[in-house]
Amino acid sequence: MTKLKPPVEKNTYYDVTFEDLTHDGAGVAKIEGFPIFVPNGLPDEKAKIKVIKVQKNYGFGRLIELYEKSKFRIDAPCPIYKECGGCQLQHLSYEGQLVAKHNQVQQVLSRIGKLQNIKVHPVLGMENPWRYRNKAQVPVADREGGLVAGFYQQRSHEIIDMEACLIQQEKNDQVVQTVKTICEKYGIQAYDEKNNKGTLRHIMARYGLVSGEIMVVLITRTKDLPHKSNIISDITAELPGVKSIVQNINPKQTNVIFGNETNVLWGEEYIYDTIGDIKFAISARSFYQVNPEQTKVLYDKALEYAELTGKETVIDAYCGIGTISLFLAQKAKKVYGVEIVPEAIEDAKRNAALNYIHNAEFAVGEAEVVIPKWYKDGVKADVIVVDPPRKGCDDALLQTILTMKPGKVVYVSCNPATLARDLRILEDGGYETTEVQPVDMFPHTVHCEAVAKLVLKPN
Image (tube, rainbow, N blue to C red; front, side, top):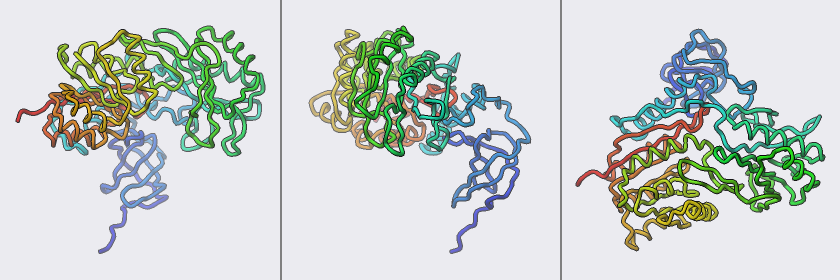
């Protein structure tokens, strides 16, 4: 059997019309049905491209000339947008981003989940889609002239020095620049990943949007931090909102940011912030949503889909620090949360106590192990809420849901593709997906969150 040769050749120019965007924001053009992925292309644009790589089933191209621009194309406002890998969609207007994300969710539900007639609502976006991130963690490097701190250049380990990031809270920019300058003043050497030498690996800033409290985290290779007391006194003098200065020690030659040891150098172990009516204690390593304004939008929708009356028992799988659990507990009879990370469960218990919430119970373990044990012990869930990582729900958890048969499942997703896959399994097991609400948690990036409501079909 002869192999079909791709209809394109490397280093050849083609005129194309972009039809779509990939999951990482590249334009998709098709030549005789053969997809070519081209960075910076937008749907409906006509362009000349050069094919630079050809694989068996797809190719990659470079944008050479635009003949017709999308009505949504704009000039990216960030001066380092083309070098930095942090955002992918700043050349697309915010209106265009919301359209693209709605299309993405609709398409993957149809293509992967074979779910054709589900109501997918327009994406809930932000009134002001800038300066939303409450956490910055930036790598540091030595250059001639001193320290640089910023994001890695796309597909490289070169750090782009950055004074401002347009999706970061301005307070975080101020913290990073101030701490960098102070460390430079005392001759602190940046970590050299090639030789595993130097001291300062990352500067991290956390900012409580409602509380105004700031945490500074210095991630170092060594336990010893030269001029520690001077650095602390300068940080507290120059950044009056700082409530906590923390050192995390990561001696390993790795690109993982955090090490296992964390010590408070000054102030409190936690800063506090509020989402809706719930107050959260946030430590250096707590998982806490980086866009609290949209987190409330997302969780309000999950709460709406759960349709709680005060009589229900709810299980929150992948509960993290209890963010959704505590929202649910305000309206449910009882909430059980499960999470595999022990520190997150400690945070969840602390956050429940902080808010005087007594009808939420938390357990450490794998959801697919703990939930069947609860079921065996007589816990009958009326609603199960899942908020899994990008890889989606573990198959054993999906089978557990199908065995327990709660009347409703609320699926909070950060990856439309795995959402579509898991909804298909739940639909085949007797559930009906009644509606899906996408929420834009990360403007100017390709990521899109969504909440799906499923109800058990009558026998």
